[in-house]
Length: 298
Image 1: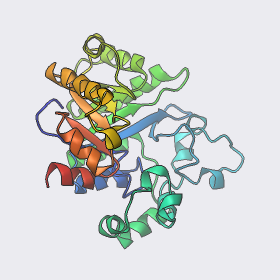
Image 2: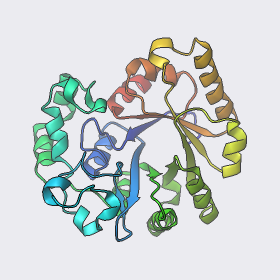
Image 3: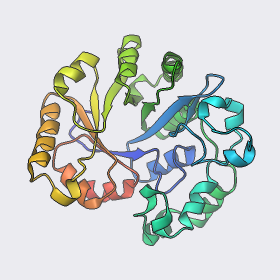
C-alpha cells in the first residue's frame, strides 16, 4: 500500500456497474484489474457483521416491501437472517432505466456506452432476479481471498456497539488468515486506535473528508499505515494551481515522503483522475474503475 504503483480501488465494489456492496460488485472489480475493493461494515441486531453502507436499508434493498411495519429500517434493528432475505440488486437495475439526471448522484455520469460495454443483459437479469443479497463480512472476505484482492474495510460506527464490531471484524479476518490482505479504515479514528491495540499486523487508514492538521504526528500517534483523503473539492475547476490546490498537493506529498500510503476518494471524473495521478498517491478510489484503468494504463 506504500509501493510506487497506483492501486485501482473499487468503491463499494465496482458500483457503477453492479449493485454496491454486494458480492457481484466485488467480483466485478476484478474484471477491471482492480487490486483492491472498498466496502462498509455494520453490526446486525444479533451482532453479525453485514456489508452495507447506509445506516438505513431503504436506498439499496426492498426492505419496505418485505417488512412494511419496521420503519425506520435501520440495519441495527434487523437480524442477519432478516437481512439475508432482502433483495439488494433490483434497485440498481431500476436506476439504469432512469434518465441520467434522475439517477442517484454517482450514476449520473454513467454513459450509455459504458452500460452497453460493462453491464451485460445476463448481468441485468441477475441483478433484477431478487437473488442478490447483502453479504456478510465472512462471505466478502472469502470472495476476496478467492479472487486475490485486497479489501479496504470501512468500519461504520454505531452507538454502544463499536467494541463488538471491532472484535467481530478482527475475528473474521484472523479466522481466514487474511491479516496481510486487509486495510481497515474509519472516519471514527478512535476505532482505528482500538484496532491497533488488538492487532499490530492489520493495516489501518485514517479516513478524512478534508486535510487534517499535523498529519504526520496524527498518523504516527494512531500507528496508522495510510491516509484515505477526500478528493480536493475544486480540483476539476481550479486544479492544483491555486493557493488551496497547492496546499492540498503539498499536504499529500509530505505524507507520502514520510512513507504513508495516500488513497484519494471518491473520484470519477477523468480530468481529476489525471491530475491526481501526477501527485504521487498510492491509490485512487472510484465508482468507475474502468476510468481509473484508462488513466493508469492508457
